[in-house]
Length: 446
Ligand SMILES: *[C@@H]1O[C@H](CO)[C@@H](O)[C@H](O)[C@H]1NC(C)=O
Ligand SMILES: *[C@@H]1O[C@H](CO)[C@@H](O)[C@H](O)[C@H]1NC(C)=O
Ligand SMILES: *[C@@H]1O[C@H](CO)[C@@H](O)[C@H](O)[C@H]1NC(C)=O
Ligand SMILES: *[C@@H]1O[C@H](CO)[C@@H](O)[C@H](O)[C@H]1NC(C)=O
Ligand SMILES: *[C@@H]1O[C@H](CO)[C@@H](O)[C@H](O)[C@H]1NC(C)=O
Ligand SMILES: *[C@@H]1O[C@H](CO)[C@@H](O)[C@H](O)[C@H]1NC(C)=O
View 1 (cartoon, rainbow, N blue to C red):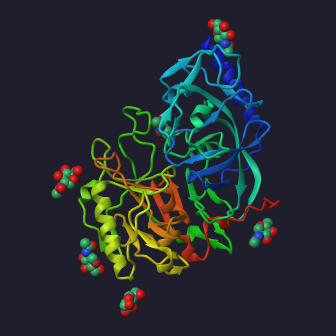
View 2: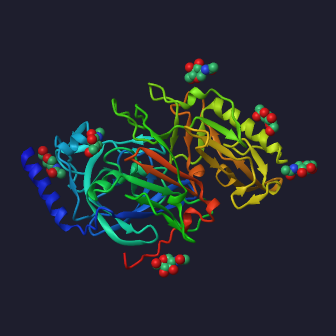
View 3: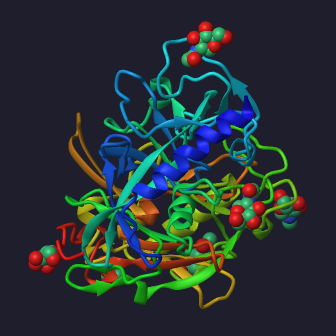
């Protein structure tokens, strides 16, 4: 029986290989990223199934693998197939379960199927569901425009049902996992095209009317209108691996699939914030350190860091004649908007520096990324404030600093899994562009 199923699997594999319109190993891809205003989460648009269907997925930077709602009423594709239990593929996926299905057959319903635990990182839920293989496609790019579509046949992911879509942006049908695992979206895309596993994100800000961009298989160029190559403005720091993985499901013995960086201190207007710096190191149990998360809207700081940080920020802002007004939950440091000067880099507030392994390797955060504009009406009339967009993560969280989406928007962030380094631009507004300025008009010559 297993031999027969391997033969079927092999047949599908050969069949798909013969079908794809491969470009070549230097092929780079681009996909649009949109920001959902109500959840403050990000969606990436890819193509999926046969015939290809445009599909929106939640962007999860730390996700181990991708998943999609396999509701048989919605899922029709001529290229999907399942992964039988006990195959090498199933074992390398780290599957720990195998299931039969007694519903009418469909995607996600087979006998003797390899099972996975797809996770929703927002409501922190996971379900047991069948693994699935289908065709994924992305548009190629020369770094300036999108071109023709390139197919990633036999893309491995998990099924889910609609219960796992709770809390995600409307219109998404699953999740795109961009983590360090061999089955993340960038890892599989680079495998098929034998290109380096290197990708970059430029998340759009709240005011952006056009999408940001994700680039796969390329270290650049990344051109944004009016013709700025952001790959020329990167600073690098090592990507750090947390030896202990913990998301919703803990895979014992497996390192984390999430991206950690080595922040060594935090400065406000150049002055170091005083706190216990050993919180910035990852200990043997995987606690501490600094992680990047696209499913966390605002940076979360461990309580003692948070307290010192907001005090130092409020203190430094006094030098700018800014007086703290009433807090707006979940934020504590807010200013009346009309008291704050506007600049090209956002509201004029103290700058925040995340200092990496060396004093001159600094991720600088200006007002455009540190502050959140909140306007509403109450009994006192119209209210309009800027609040410091960082939140209290409580005592003893797993990770001391979780850098959230707001602080990563309008920054070009590159994840190089070959050299294990993290490239960052700081605010691209400095270069007179923004993440919504990639030219998504197709170039028919590409
Ligand atoms: C799974 O096997 C059972 C018998 O063991 C059968 O009744 C059922 O229809 C099969 N389901 C699928 C999806 O093949
Ligand atoms: C991931 O792939 C690399 C290269 O193919 C391999 O060396 C490594 O063992 C794989 N990791 C896992 C966890 O399977
Ligand atoms: C700093 O934090 C570490 C880890 O939480 C702890 O072991 C150490 O005692 C702390 N040091 C001080 C001076 O509080
Ligand atoms: C407050 O700001 C002043 C002047 O910038 C600085 O000298 C002082 O150390 C700051 N205090 C704290 C607690 O950050
Ligand atoms: C702050 O206010 C004082 C007194 O009104 C003024 O002299 C000073 O220039 C102001 N500083 C800034 C940075 O606006
Ligand atoms: C965007 O790209 C298209 C196709 O290459 C080109 O015709 C158009 O001029 C570009 N738009 C801008 C604003 O440069």
